[in-house]
Length: 227
Length: 404
Image (spheres, each protein chain N blue to C red):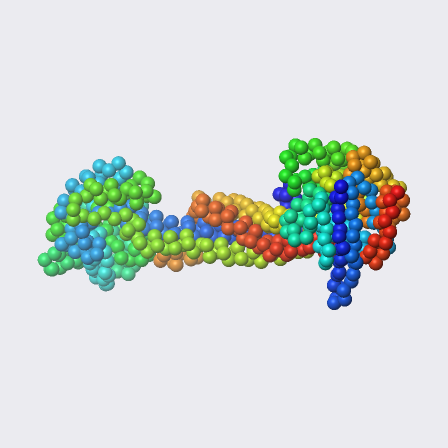
């Protein structure tokens, strides 16, 4: 079953009056349990595609379906609901909330989902435990290394049981050893828990692990390889 | 957690938060203290007027208040006073005979209100007996009169000197008697002092040939704040041809002033609120612009615009609430030294004396003062955050996350 389906998606930005074609009629789909990488050079459109299928950005033309529901014409509140319940994000810059500790950061989407306190705390602690960072529960992002912060970000992304985790250059700010550990972890989550991952990356070690590789150039998918 | 987040966001930039907190606290401090002293001053004016002369309620024959004349006297004042005394809430009562007249000394004369009183029972009603600055209060001795120190100065007389009082009798003839000044008084109201003199009611009745009639019965009740509720009961026991009026009816301008003040104080709240409003707009705009990227992240993880809006308003509301608590707390502490001894405004004593206030002002806190502060100020603070919050929720998630 397709979790994500993009149909003839265009994204055209206005750069001081000059139209920039970030996506040029992309059609693709992502199925459950995939471990997919969108690869390509900078400016190829991979982050734009990730944002578009992640309901963060609306396409100029075309349609995106998430769990078979079209995102077109959805209100801002509905889109926020979709992001809250269906999608987990992992960003290059971790993007943890600086005034919250690791446990609170992981709990944050669960608060928004309205989960009761006790259950939320147990789930968040379990996530930190599973990712091997339970000892960081009460540390704030400023007190953690980049690798630790990115693990917390992964825990936050999967805490709400999303349909898919979208990771934009998750290893770009990490050294290779830390990056490898993070990828091991994500791969493990994919294999053992069946969590679907879609990466946008030009990091070779991410690309090497892809079971499906979508290569982009000039706003189009030029190659779709399954391994 | 949203409240936790709002609270922690406040302290991201402690200096900025402290500046706005101090501004709010100083505004509230000034507002609460000035409100407390203003209310205190007005209550002193009222208490002084009640204590010096008016009492809590008065009984007159119909028409006397509009047209004081010897034809409008109470015929059987003792009967009415007994009825009044039988009411459980009446704690003291006294009869008076009072008319406008002329008081003359060998050197000058002045138009005054001649007030014939029952010296002993009046002592329980008004503060005149306690306001003597020279000589002594009336002790029942015939032919004595009390005048104020200011009037004595004007008439160029002193204790022991003789003055002549004149007033019209009901026949139209002038009644006059000579009196010896028994003592000089000074109340908190210079206007009152210049126009009121006190003599024994018996002497005054003799001078005006009124017989045992009185112009007025004045009384005190156990709880002045309940006087409006007591009045129907007072009117029930009074016969036809007699009217009862509470101090609220007798001092309409002062009561109106106090009631108007309760409404006008909102203008001061508005001024403080507006000053704070713009401070909060500025502070929250800075806070929002500093956190554009983070707001994008909030949106990305599924936070709804309404929740972001409320979070920003909660930050401002919390700032307003803390500032109010600090300001009101300091105001409460600051008033304590003045609570018993009052604020000495002797340098303005002439002006205060003419307004019927003593030169010491005693602050008076009302629940409304605190309630108004704690409602209005945080509300204005939250309103000040509306524009920044609207700016925040209008951000698009992707654009916001690109913002560094």
